[in-house]
Image (tube, rainbow, N blue to C red; front, side, top):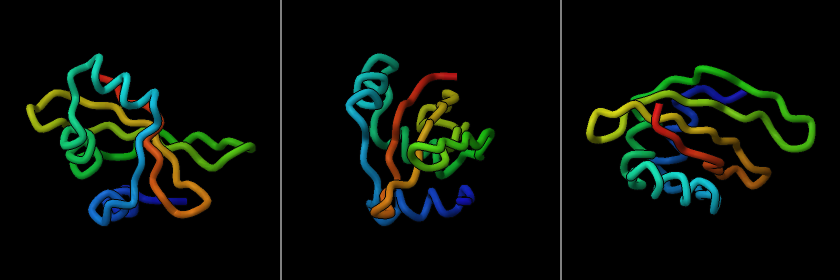
Length: 90
């Protein structure tokens, strides 16, 4: 089970990818990739969702670069990448 530092390390190393849904939601809420990165760096895991079909999903709550609260749902893929599933303003 990953910790917030593990997620941040993957982001820092560029080992992350955005789903098309995450990109759409980022645009709708006017968040940039830097907001997502900062949200993970400043955030904490508020919920872990076990998924028998994939891997554990992590719900992260953090702050965007402009101070807004940002929610990020992500998981670690079989190849070790952090997959950002969705992003939303809290």
